[in-house]
Length: 156
Image (tube, rainbow, N blue to C red; front, side, top):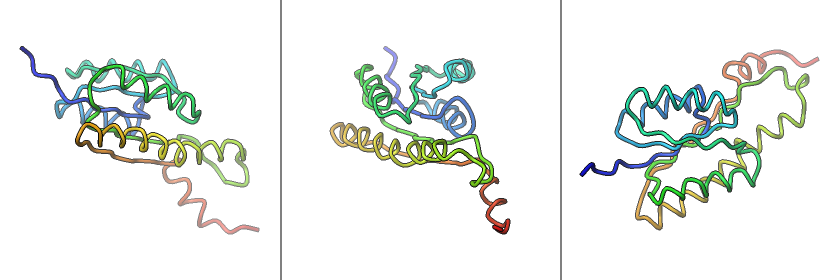
């Protein structure tokens, strides 16, 4: 009989930090449920992690939307396995000078980085306490390097 491997959930797993977290958790013996909003990139990432010997399920959802975050959390419960690790990566890949970006886009970044993170931490933490333990890792990135470079520019 094959022992059941622990289960980890990774958001933002189609690239960047989230993808690397998924790979490393897989290498450490976790089965995975990975999430991103881009179907094609998520499935490509899943194939790459599977090729390294990890069991991977995908859950496409735009976590900026409350209903989709709820659906994503519910989907992780359908496995009937406790989530041992939740790696919640809210990496956003666009940037630019704040005065030149769309305010609606900026507020969606805040929703993803703050509201969605708090939302999912609340859901997974309750599950983990009920199961007797677990770990949560929070990571976030906003257009690496852009904010730092822009912060030094004088405002006229």
